[in-house]
Each structure stands twice: as structure tokens, then as C-alpha cells.
Image (cartoon, rainbow, N blue to C red; front, top):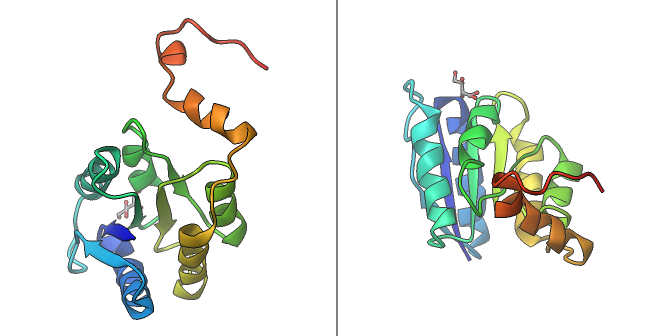
Length: 155
Ligand code: RB5
């Protein structure tokens, strides 16, 4: 499986840790689009590039890291077909796959430690989407029926 990774300076150290971890496993082909130093950088540029690669089908999954994970997830989720999940623990990483079929794992490099993050990466990359009742909900995310304003009922 090919995985695309990106971070800003706030997520640089954790992104590097994820990259080393994935390369050590020798199961995945890893594409690191940067940044490549701790110099101050803008997270939207990186998030746009990763999200575009996922939305366009170039990569099936990605990992984005900034200081909090917030900026990266806000940008990435603007792309149709992208389900970027900002996760802080093993439970949210697992549920992001089981229920949300997330295709980008987003983490905060200033929020969680590398030990936890690498376990989250392993979960994210191995837990399958549960399907079933969640398929309908996944399809509703980008549904024109909602964006066109025609369908806004609860339940
Ligand atoms: C950079 O200082 C910081 O704002 C960024 O890494 C991220 O946390 C934004 O959401």
C-alpha cells in the first residue's frame, strides 16, 4: 500500500517518526511531501497537496501532522471524498476506520507523543471499515441532496 505523509513545522518531528516507523515495517511505500525542517511553514499548502492526492485517487490513504492537527483536518476535509480524522488516542484511531472509513489520519505533534502516535498509525492502517449501516452515512457526507439544501431532516 502507498501512503502519503505531510506535516508543517509543528508536526515535523512526529511526521519523521511516522515515516521511520513505516519504512522499518517494509510493508508500505511511503511518499513524504515535507516539510523537511523545523523552519516555520504554512500547514494549508501541505494539507491541500495531500488531500488532493487522496481525492484524485493517487493515494488511498495519508497521514497529516501539524501542531494540533486542527488546521490540517480543516483544510483536508474541504475535498470531496476525503475523510480526514483528527485522532488523539487508540479508540478514535480505531473508530475512524470502523465507522468513518477515514482515509487520512491527522494528529497533533504538540498534543500526543510518538509512542502513542505510532500505535495509532498501526491501527489506522490495519483496521478495516465496518461497512453495513455506515455505508449510507459515508455516502451522505458528500451528498448533493444536502449541499443542494433539499434534504435536511433528522433521523
Ligand atoms: C503552527 O504554529 C500551528 O498553528 C500549526 O501547526 C497547527 O497547529 C495549526 O492548526
